[in-house]
Length: 277
Image 1 (spheres, rainbow, N blue to C red):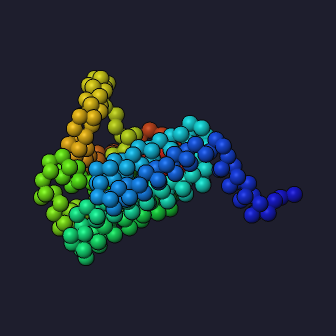
Image 2 (tube, helix red, strand yellow):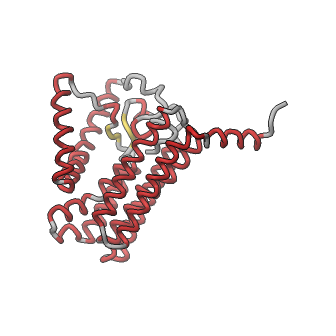
Image 3 (tube, rainbow, N blue to C red):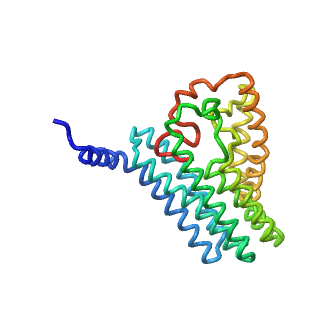
């Protein structure tokens, strides 16, 4: 005797909230709390801690999906929770932080720029969720992402704050310039530009030891000069955007796809149902 649909839905929800599934979902909840705490620090005028809180949310967001795969605890509940948490931590929180930092000096245009950033982040997440089950995804099949991922977009939006904290120069708080910057990052998040994913980062064997050394040096630089280092990493990522487009066009001309990419459930930003873009 088959169970009614509502009973089957209740059982699926119960499985998604099993003890094993609580670990990745708890990490997601912690990321959400970290992003919201960033808003609290911004209201208090402590913008260093507010940015650090959102960066911590990004690190936790990179862990929850991997924890779900490791524990085999992927669930639809986790996917929905992750998307909602990301929309707040990487859309609403950065928009409010940057507005309270500089954009409130330009109330109308500044608020529109902050709104545009938050809305574009949410639209990106909604677009991503709507495309999960689509077979025809040229960027994904070639091993690329579509647009800038939400956590990366939040990090890019903070570039003026990185430079302001590192240099102490008031010029970086120019409300007009920061508003234009927020609009640019909002566009990159919802754009159809192919961007590099970790699956496309395959350095030659001869360079891998040097790459490990570079990663170690970068970590040391983050401890010694965190704000200049974050600014440098942000600028390097932006420089790689046109490079990613060039690589995609070359792959497209060859008519090739990344090995196993068409069968993968998600790429870098979509590695499991618990990891949103």
